[in-house]
Each structure stands twice: as structure tokens, then as C-alpha cells.
Length: 116
Length: 111
Image (cartoon, rainbow over all chains, first blue to last red; front, side):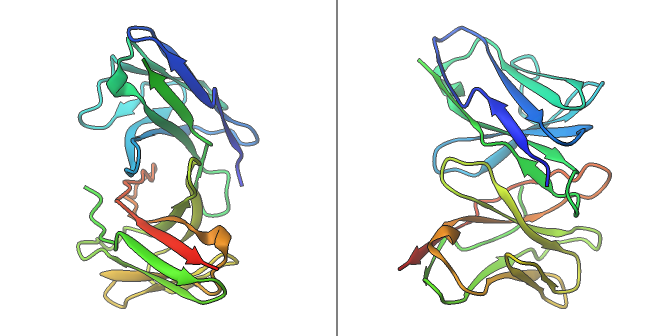
């Protein structure tokens, strides 16, 4: 199946700064990627669907101006958390659709964001 | 709204079969049932999926009720590496199969 990487694996930043998280599809050209976040001991929450070459589709309640998504190529989507605050501290996970036998999603290893 | 219901946790012994139940009573005719699992501090991984018929793969089996209102993920011989959170998910169809995760079942496997 598809291999998905994320960078960085963990990041610590000061409140008010912006943080960019990269999601790469290493062996598959992904027209669609998904971004999730997961708080400790909670389930994954879908934030947005990232479409190559077009604007992302955000889930209800997710601020598009705070969580900027760019999917400029078929192998890279980025999530930028702008003006991060401690409540944005979370585990951010991306996934790609396709590249597998059953059109299943392949998930990245996640990025742990801690905002001080 | 995940629209699936699973027990919060289950326990199993190593080498024994495990049956993980899921209720999805409001499922529509075109919704697939997917199972993913997540090990601690990792992204989820695909386990299996189905629509109407029972499905088998090298990881597990999926038994789907005739009325499709429930399903059961079967791990035939649990190992310690199977300890994870198992998510039963309805896909919402269409060209983009977005997944809405529920709370999942935390499976503990005892040696």
C-alpha cells in the first residue's frame, strides 16, 4: 500500500507562532489527502479534505483561517497552524486515499504539536 | 456524528479468537463498513472493509449481519501486537470516502 510520511514528528513552539506540518505520499500520487487531529485518549477528528490544485474542504467547526491547508502537488499537502495557542496542542495525522487495492486510506505516523 | 457504536474496551488472551462488535443501525444501502486500528502514538492502519458479504483477509475476518445493522471484526488468533484501538467506521460514499471515526474499542491482549 501507499507509504505516507509526516514532518516533523514532533514540534514544540511558543504561543502565537505558526507551525507548518508536511504530509508526503512517498509512492503514490494522491489527489486527495485528509487531515485529522487527535487529543489524548480521544478519537480522531476529521479536520479537512485536501484536494490537489483546489481549496480544501473543511469540516464544520474547523476554522479555515487558522488551519491553512495547501495541496500544491500530488505528493505533498501541508497544514499550517497559524498563531498557535496551547489549546491547539494535539496529535495531527494525515492520510491519503487510494494507492491501495481497496481504495483504503493510508495514514501518516502523526505529528505531535505542543504549544507552550 | 460517527453513527457507529462499539464497546469502550475488551480483553482477550493471546492465541485466542477475538470478536469485536459494532452497531450501525442507521447505515444506508451504499455505506461501506470499514475497520481500522491504531497502535499507541501511531497513525491508524487499515484492517478490512465490506458492504454486504462476509470478508476475509490475512489480518482478520468481517462478519456483516444480514440486515447490515451490525458487524463483527474477528481476529482469529490474537497476539500481543494486536493490542490497539479498533475503529468501526461507516464511509460516506461518493468519490471521496471520508471517514468519521467513533470512539473505538480498546483491545487489551493478555499473555
